[in-house]
Length: 84
Image (cartoon, rainbow, N blue to C red; front, side, top):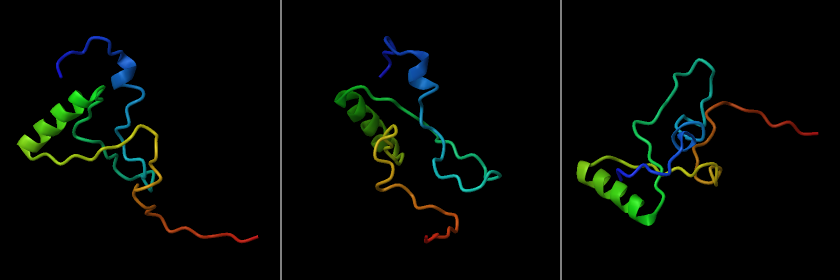
């Protein structure tokens, strides 16, 4: 995965999902992932997973804005329900 031809800055910058989606408080420390990859093919995914497996690095796959509500972490703030 050393071929970066065809990648634009946008692929690695503005649209990356690198931060904790579920920060509860404004003063909570910013949680940022240790690594990020944007595989473009099955072969890319296989190479990344093989490298992680060899190095015993845990992997948390996150989609880019798709289906985060299912299987995502629960809210950590006490909330109330309002009935009308």
